[in-house]
Image (tube, rainbow, N blue to C red):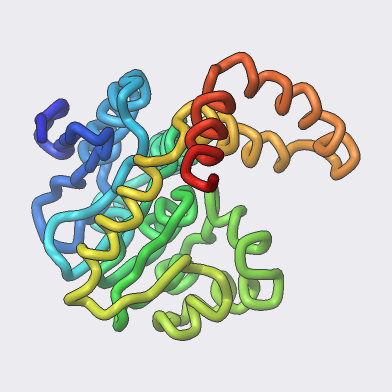
Length: 258
């Protein structure tokens, strides 16, 4: 395992299988997102996105108390309109860097996942949570609306559930989060890292160009009508055969199944 990013508020490693791990380095175990943390994470993601050997990215905080327990209220309490827009633009850029990352991104969620932290988690492709984790969008309780990647919530969990979470600010546990589709999977806390390793190895073993293409298609389908998206995929299917991966992986499948 090689360290490839070392910043005051972000560090990252990549192993020989192409599994990258990005740590949020905060001053506390709640992994609060303030401007310095946000800036370092964006810088780290830009670097990691340029590394072709990365097959999957794990995004995690320090410790097991929280994934991210929200944005920095102490910083936000002193904002005016202009500085508030700068702050939220930075958080938007961080979430979008995760959402547009070329490889699959797995959020490791051992505990609290609130506000901007839940938006960051929703920008990930996979959300793996430990039983007992808590999720919420409590912004209305501190006088602000949920914005930027809270927009993903209605499509992710449905308008009824999203309306409740966004208007009430109430928390939901892992059982409800799993039933609603807010998380991908829930495991016992002691099994979290083993399951994370299994998921990471699964993605690392898949055809990398096809996986990148599939994620790019998922993002593009969000912008297209159903008919346009269907028709758009015909050319994409053809492009896949220019990579050499179908010949290699289909050949291996036929060898293993004859």
